[in-house]
Length: 252
Ligand code: PAF
Image (cartoon, rainbow, N blue to C red):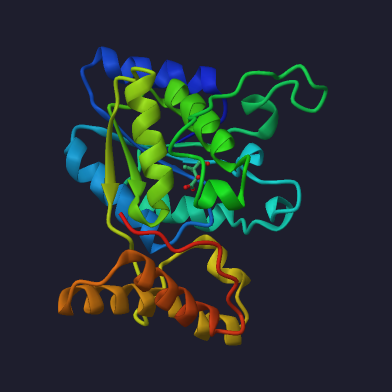
């Protein structure tokens, strides 16, 4: 498995593969990998076939964190991440530094960002106003480095996947996107690198999210119910958990 540290080196490798007609599947991550990420790697491998290449990026992207968010304490464990990638048969790990991804950002000369203007406002974008600008910018930069044919994202970050799908279409990236199912712990909690922040009490209460989703499904299957009513009932169910702070409940 190759470790590639700069966009230029990644592009060189990707171009060699492309000249050989080898398809490239890509899984972008911020590391601290878990079974959910591994399942995305497996999807990429299945779609690319044994002769194709699978690239995983590990980069904790500073531009998608707000000023008071968890950038400095975001969990990291590179040796373990690399072991997981190796076990999944990943061909290359793209591991850029902040300095190569955003040269001049500290001094203020870095000044180009990608902004999706419709789907990224509201929901997660309402609670985190600069988040999606950071995501679209870094994903565009990662695409330009890895030159993938297919990029695989997790359904857990549903709005992120919708924003990236839009960006791919609007900016004519020649890349297919696949959104793979959410992986859950046995008690229903969606797997996430950030679950490590939860103390045992919060961890137990966090299952309210999957319980709330199941409850929605149950109620909708039983009878027609106005979205506003369901939203307020489900909101109340989540808010009843002392550790929960509800940002939004939305249906599509
Ligand atoms: O979903 C994530 O882990 C990140 O938002 C992504 C897509 C890797 C961009 O930093």
